[in-house]
Image 1 (cartoon, helix red, strand yellow):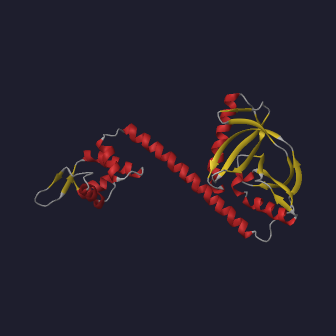
Image 2 (cartoon, helix red, strand yellow):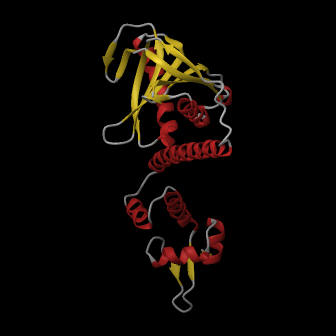
Image 3 (cartoon, helix red, strand yellow):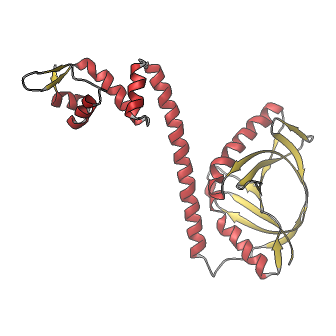
Length: 270
């Protein structure tokens, strides 16, 4: 048997934690000296301790840990829980990273206030384009990245399954949802017949008679500065915006910082 101190060292936990587990009935000592009250543990109890620490690391409360252990959770079940928790944490990390990128983009816009480059804006007619698209929902623009990325990944898989060859140009656009939030349209140019099956749509986006356009160079998450440059140009030149700009991906190399995207915002004379 091991003293509580020795057992704590082998289990890589604190003596204080072991005393707490004892008090809550989660991990009782194998033997308590009736004269001194000293706790003693066996090496076999390390298995239960490992499960307690692993389940706590997965975000379970001590009450939930006790219930799971009482049901004799297997190693395979623990591994499945770990994979699920890992996926949840990775999703949360991706969302946090996207928010940090959005904050950085907002900061760059703040730093460039008063010197917005509007000389690169071009007013032009945008012809109709046929796209295949999937749609999703996001509560706000700061959360678009974690939504639109998976949409495009699924779109590629759905097109391959349908035998549709995608073009080289992506077209994404947005709409206000009726109850708030943003409807996200992730599309790509195709030469296929119109269809609307199981959420996959092939449709012709209507032409835009007048669009204020600007080319953004950089990751999609950093597009805010270019969007606001459009706003300055629209106001300064006597136009009025009548919708969100389309985002047309012109170049998408592996390095997202080298992406080239044209923003096409529909406008009319004010």
